[in-house]
Image 1 (tube, rainbow, N blue to C red):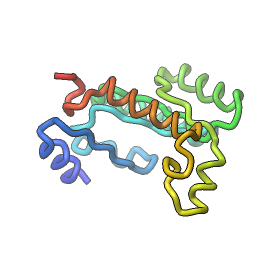
Image 2 (tube, rainbow, N blue to C red; image 1 turned 90 degrees about the vertical axis):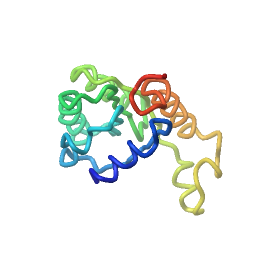
Image 3 (tube, rainbow, N blue to C red; image 1 turned 120 degrees about the vertical axis):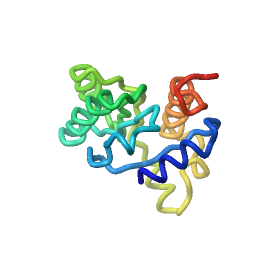
Length: 149
């Protein structure tokens, strides 16, 4: 994984953004793996174990020098779910980057074997994910170094 991330980061001449989906654990958080990481999105759900993973990963990401660290609330069904995540993030000094609501359209699209964007481009989850893309591009930049040169 380290080699692949290094190749992706150096092979793009800083003009591309690469997004890598990794499992929710601290195992991949070695200096060699995150050397080229400018932003980290930690997807969490309103459940204790999920939030605790964010609580463990965020300080480690800061220690490793990752410039932009956000929690992304996922599968949020109620105002109470959102408040639980917001409160946890505030208590642990983690910025909440976005809230993705529970959206039945996700399951409906999957049952039909279609991408959510094709199935229902107006779905609330689509809008939320679009906001995440704007957040990352606006804060982490597109040149691979976190600045917009």
